[in-house]
Length: 320
Ligand SMILES: [Zn+2]
Image (tube, rainbow, N blue to C red; front, side, top):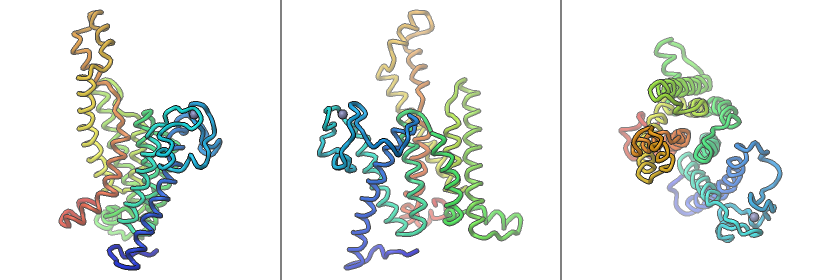
């Protein structure tokens, strides 16, 4: 484990620039693999073979047309063989991965901590985008992700881990670091998933339909295994705040934009209520991607926490 002096000048400064560029390039290459996972996992297709092909004309994509971010730019977002549009989702996810990899290096250096958060970032990116696209949080990501989270927490315990503190405070038991890390991951997973599960049950009782699925509960267990008790609590706070604010905005926009208004019109003619009321009912039932908000919340805690603590040291301990 070694750390690079961040604010160095001269040779050290150049080294930082070179490593930053390397992290970015590594990030966009990993991002291109995440795109494969995002498009293929929900379809149950192998993520290894066949190689990348155009989803429209099925022509295999040449290696030089498969360069992350840049290929999309020089192809101007169109397939070379059939000319059909390639979604800007691909270069955007590659770019986001590259930038998050750079953020991980700048915040955590070249350390085991960086490896942990890079791995976590990849899992979260797959889940966040998959939930946004198809409202799915696949088990094949959540389950191994949960196991990996506990393993990583043994080597890199969650920041401000509460498990060791609680064990000492209540049981006068001094735990070795790796055990405290794993226990904190388990406590985070249990707290996050039970709270979400309780909220889901409450929501169903009040609204009469499912507001979130078991996928969200399992995703929260995975996040808890990486972040521990405190980080899980903060992720739920940020995630549910984002979900409420953006969710209300989306539902209002759907209502005002006349989303599925012809359905409301037909139902209104059948005497099921006023058109306005029916339009509002339909907009309110729009399924929001809760996993996407939780994922953004978790990344905000991992990457934003140290920055906030750096600017406002008095918040250290509150933010991780
Ligand atoms: Zn094509």
